Amino acid sequence: MVDLHRFPSLASIRAFECAARLGSFTRAAAELGTSSASVSYHVRQLEAQIGVVLFRRHAQRVELTGPGAIVAKETIAAFAALRATFVRAGEADEKKLSITALPTFGTSWLTPRLGRFRAQQPEILLDLDLSVEAHDLGAGGFDAAIRNGYGRWPGLRAVKLMPSIFAPLCAPALAETAAGFADPRRPSTIPLLGRPDWWALWYGALGVADAVPPERFGTTLSAEYLDMAAAIAGHGIAMGSPLLFADEIRAGRLVLAHDLVIDTGRSFWLTFPVTRQRSRKIARFREWVCDEALRECAAAAALIRRAVPAADQDMPS
Image 1 (cartoon, rainbow, N blue to C red):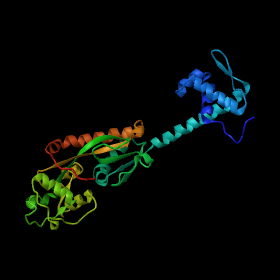
Image 2: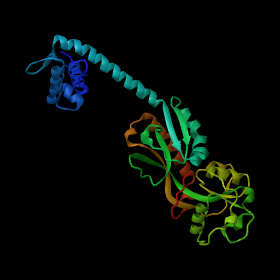
Image 3: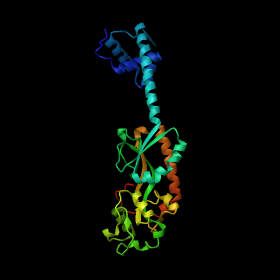
Image 4: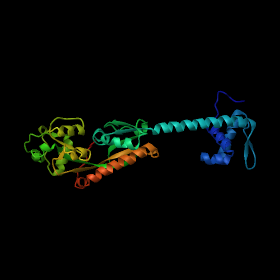
């Protein structure tokens, strides 16, 4: 008699369903990735638990008993419904792509290009989060991230997009009057914008060992893209990535204030969990963003080649 308070083991039910649907312990074993002896064992466990013989065993085959056929009909239908549910869940998941990116990368480089991704993949709804925090992609809140570093994050696949290079940038109107800023000891009325440690890295690559006086810095802003907005407005010289602000340089809103470009040795990477490598939506975004980054790097190839290696700093963008 079936004990209604003790549900049969799911492993046994799964083995029975597969064997009943395929009409063979051997074929069931192949589908389940186990042995026919294991399938037979689980079916016998199920029969013992419910007190009903479900299969007649013959030398080269098995066949359902009358009670077995009753159980098989309902069990096969239930598993088919479960499979359909999982398929629908997967299809729903593939329709929305959640990306988290660093604020400057997302604001200045990625967002202006997203229209092209939407045109190529109109069926994918993109949700973009901008945060300095490195979110745990294994927690399920985001499908992928764009990070800055060396491409080594446990459990994540990292695809390189572009190098992390930096140079002083300013509005064209300031280019001539700003020429003396390369000597931090020289008095200047034009303030420096951006993180002092980035400037120290740049001056170090220039061969200037003296610390930059605090009074040389202008308004402190919270992100690189805000520094660049201030530079475009003529409020100073900002340290930032000529790759991320290539559109502003091409449009003539920004120019390089000095020929020295530094390479931190870090790069921007598209990252996603190794377990999601087969996701179609991630693959499509990966292909698109890599193509966009490749075009950007090709257009700035001369600038990238002349970048001087510099000591690394913690430099999110």
